[in-house]
Amino acid sequence: MARPLIRRQQIFVAEYLVDQNATRAAIAVGCSRRSARQQGSRWLTNADIRAEIARQTRERCEKLGVTADEVIAGLKKLVFFDIRKCYRQDGSLKPVPELDDETAYALRSMDTKEAYRHFGRGKAKAVGVIEKIRMADKGLNLERLGRSIALFKDRVEVEVEVNLAERIAAGRKRVMESQDRRERKKTPHFSS
Image (cartoon, rainbow, N blue to C red; front, side, top):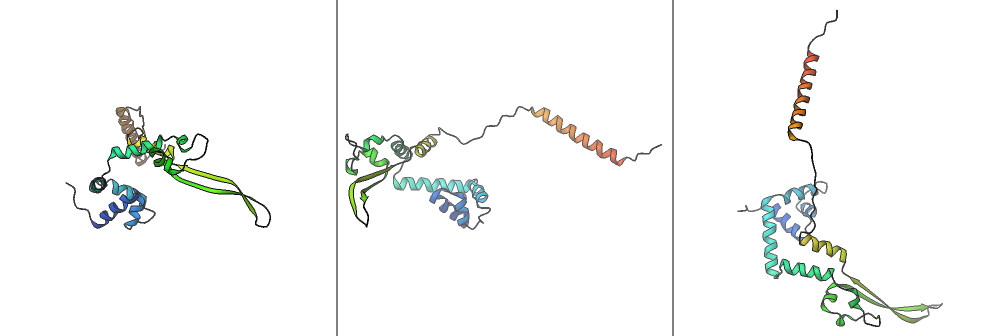
């Protein structure tokens, strides 16, 4: 069972849950900016703090009625939307009410402006409409989706081909050689 957290640890957990940024959370509890990254990382290795973060995350999900499956389904919508669904057959942009649910879900913003042709002295004539849409970032969300299903792992693999016994023997040999050199320095040499 996890022990109760001290006040600074409670603040750290609350701040960490805002944006999952351990450095910022460490600064919020009073760590210097210089050491905040290391302190935040160290605090995240504390089993009691990890347990509290997991507990509060579970409570939030239950309160909101959000499941991991729903989050993954949302990411899937963002990744696999088809930009062509934003347009009519004639190439004009559909208004938001005409978009299907998946396309509307992936829509970040839509902007419509009138285009003008300017003549001298502040005179202008409307010549058309400029329509801009911004959709969810497919690459970013594809990476998020891949990470959520453990498709990608941040790890470093190191292959070491040195036999442990050989390393120990080499270390012993260096120690013996070092001791021999020290002994030779202590022994006086007489020249004849």
